[in-house]
Structure formats: C-alpha cells, structure tokens
Image (tube, rainbow, N blue to C red):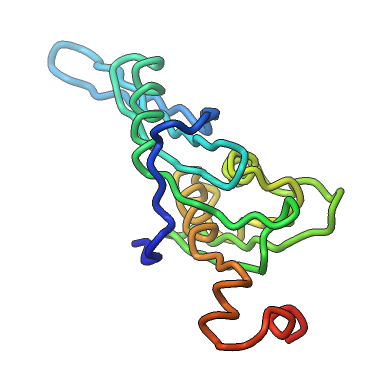
Length: 172
C-alpha cells in the first residue's frame, strides 16, 4: 500500500471538513423480504495539505456517513502543496482506475472530475489539472487519487536524496 515514512497524520486537533463522494444502496433479498443497507464513500481534509478517505456501511444513510468520516480520519495523509498546486506530475493506479495529476499555473482552478475534485479540494489544492484515465468507479478513483497524492515528493526532499542543490531540482 503506502510506503512513505512520514505521510500519516493523526486527526487529533485538526479542523477537518467532510465531503460525501458517493452513497450506494445495497439490497439483499432474504426469505423474509428485502433488506436495505447503505455504503458511503467520504473524503475529509483540512484544506491545508491533509486529506483522507473512508468507507462506511450501515442500515441507515446518516450512520453510514458517520462511519465513513471516522474511517477517513484514521487514514489521513500529508500532501505537499506548493503555492496552491502540486510539486510535479503524478500517475497512480488502483484497480482499473488510473489517474493523472499535473501542476497548474496560479488561477487555473481545479480541473478534475467529481470524485477526484472532492479529494483535491479537501487537500487544499487550488490549481491542478487532473484526468481519470481508466474506470469511473468512484471508490477506485478516490483511492488512486489519494495514492497519487501520497507518492508526491517535496523538492527539498528530492534535493537531499540526490545530494544536489534545490535550484538544480527545478531546472533539471
């Protein structure tokens, strides 16, 4: 799954905003009739580089959303946000969903589809170009987007790893 050392964040005293990405009604037919349950895919973020996604399942919608929020708070990651955008292009895959995110100039806005938009806005990214290349399944698109954001590296970390100056990281 995620391999970075210091990307996990505790939800302790963060001011998190929740966004419900999708709600799915599940029907199970039994001898006594139909049993309905709901699953809710939720994204939480503080708008300043911390984001998480979670899935909640319950007999009622509100309870499923609450469980999803609690799950999302357990899966928070730190995202490097520089001047409202991301430091570099990133491609990630989860299941059949493949996502591509690219940095954009200031004032561009969030150019992304529904599921990806929720994750990027919750992370506090204001200018980005994003494209979902594979499946449109919201669960896998959200997971792929979070995976892409988790694998982003800050230029300072890249410079230290390569033993080069920060200027050379940007100029190639």
